Length: 516
Image (cartoon, rainbow, N blue to C red; front, side, top):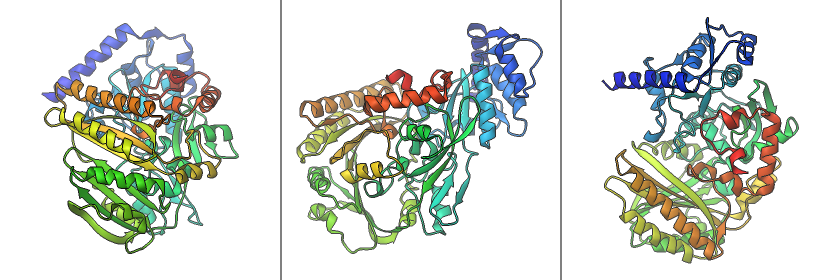
């Protein structure tokens, strides 16, 4: 019955779209453009802006690579790959290109037919419509762009955006190198990198975006270009923060790291001892060892802390501020292992919860423990008001100046506008079943973020940066990079996408044209 209902909804949607928004024309530039691409046109009118018509055309344009519509057995599987249930929107069809050339042809067809689209790598973006789309458009999923290859000197690995990090880590194990990939190994490559990317030892090596030496990009006009520090250098710089405002990235060359030995442990702490943990965290961040990392996730009933250190050591002195705090439980005892082992065991265990996710982020400067303590108290009040089944989490991600200096020194720097000071990138998010109380949950998250941001600003602690990978649907991260960087991104976007296809036809994203 659910399948029949879904089919009926899509059919109704196509009819409504055809009636309300399609512009039937056979003499327009659309027909000529499609003919030049070798696309066989049906008899009758070419419907511009109609997803149903576009999908029927795509089915013939890619005969070796099925275009999945609602009647296809694999359609629901593809839709359900989105992690958050509110992002499982019923696209008119799903296309899975397997090469840059297919992406090129696809973008040209969508542009010619003025059809909305969304781009998905791994599907971990929790903002509805950012990597998903309803029946008014086409979902482009990049899962078949999953190449992985390493250079002869093992200094660079080429990865496709359709990979998940666990595949990359497994591939690199035998070469005794790793990359600045996702802390959760099931996250997709594409969105993680373009959003900045926090790896397990981000304070040591910098952000994942800083490790990219080459982007292969399909531009909206169909051209396939390499963007490096010497080739299309302005596009290369623009992609170090400019997200998907220029085209679709189909390959990344990433610098590898040879330091694969790692110490790690994971403990939990009680609510009563969480203030002590936050005090220790502030002390740690103000004088952090760049080879260490401490990550904290706070939930209403407990606090989880990850301790990591590059190299094999006994008990790193970097973690002394936490030493006297009673541990409630030990999830992973102190271990001297490998970074790949860590990422493939601990990193593969997360992101399994079914439900809806919603969140946002802000950044504040660390000068001591007081503001961390205050934010925790405010968070607990908000968490206590959540409806049954909803869990509100508070994740203070500490960033030290070395991350910023690494970004400025690698491959020409980035456009994020970061300040070299101890800071925290707060991620507040809720996970909950899809229920009528969803608006209450999202409202609580928004109110909490607004309250904490206002408090940080009033105390002179607020920093402008908004971390893209954790940003909410209504936030404007590109603005947070600073006016100069925002204008640069817009200039590059206009140059490489003069018809503004990525601004007009992409379903939802952090559009540079809307943040100016």
